[in-house]
View 1 (cartoon, rainbow, N blue to C red):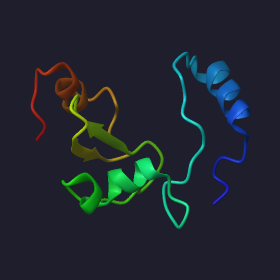
View 2: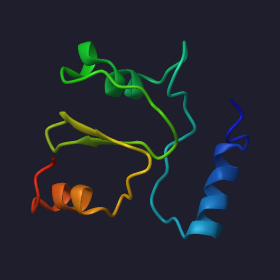
View 3: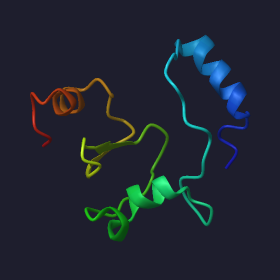
View 4: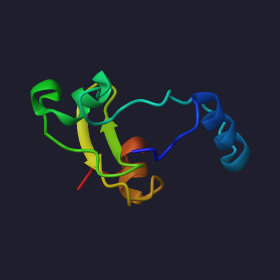
Length: 97
């Protein structure tokens, strides 16, 4: 839908300059449609992940995958990645609701 028209290199440079990103970034991929990337096929189809069906609603939707590679939860794009729910799950101090 043209939401991110830049090349992978342009997106990387933008994120580094504007957001201080220092971590490796994934390449731009399709998260829906006929050319959906295999990762998102697995994340969104219960027959693939064994847990649940979901659909990508918007940028910044979060998929929580445990250390054993199991899909645990899908978190709304509106949820802050530093929320108590997400940080608590990552640190093991708070179970998911």
